Length: 418
Image (cartoon, rainbow, N blue to C red; front, top):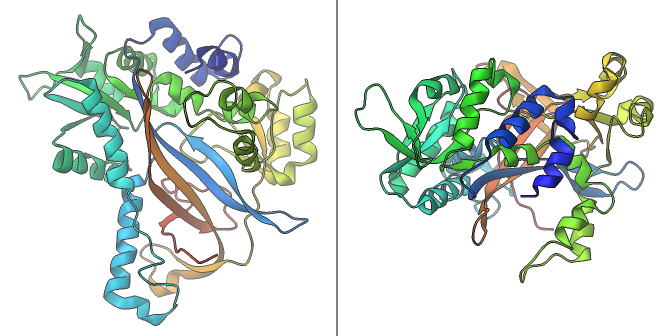
């Protein structure tokens, strides 16, 4: 909501958008066309790993990143948790562990929780006979996670969904004289008014192979339909924003000095938030200092660009060679982050799909926890709620952690007494 902050950090004139064409183009479109709908919806996921201090061996929880666009696998995490509770009821896991009981396997409300956010935005739009638009990728591989949201919207809220790619929207989408977003489908005579635009595409440059896809995104963003997320909210999820917030005094300026209402943050709250962050800095820090620091401590770092969807980071031994080829003008688009070091010695069996018992491998594994939530904000009182969790498990040797890109699998929580 702080346009000046986003302009300075992510903009094409002062920030990351100068060196990152993808970020810069989104920012320019936002500034050129503006918005007509102040209310916006965020379906968020904040990801965490356990970290073991190499000196004290103290274990704490550290934030990996905060996702503001296409925060996926909420619906499938809901099904995974339900599956594990079903297996407990049907087999008792054959008595393999006393920890596997009904008390320790918690329910997960991600599917109804996230849909509650979409339904709240739909209701706030205030027009009957409207539908929610899912913007999806061509040949969408993650369709099963998305369909559960669609079914839940219809079955429990009576809200219809229309699915369209950017290329389809270039033909079907238009804006009326009063800025309503209208979808006209070839097999339907009555145009559809859209209440909420939910983006499951648009987070990667490959979703915009030509300027036409960007123009379609800008058309959607300037309509009266509630955006999830708006371009501004997508930009706010950039890794650069994460790094800038970690600088001394920056997050305090938002939480201590600008927060209002009865639930104001305290200095102790801010201290606790900061304790969940690893060290971060920009590669353009003080001229060459950022690159020098990254080169010297490469084995303990990950380099992150302004990208979502997995498979974009540079890790440890690959960093020096990457830095050799990085142009000075591109440094601002990357941040260096200290590696989170999960505790070692946590073993499980990994089985490749279709491999059967012969394809199983006992491995040292790492699990990442994602916490879902939603917020409807921008005009009037902010409404925000928690919306369940996600667990992803992978072999320790894998640096990346995405499910869709094949690095990890969906898992469930087992609660233990402290």
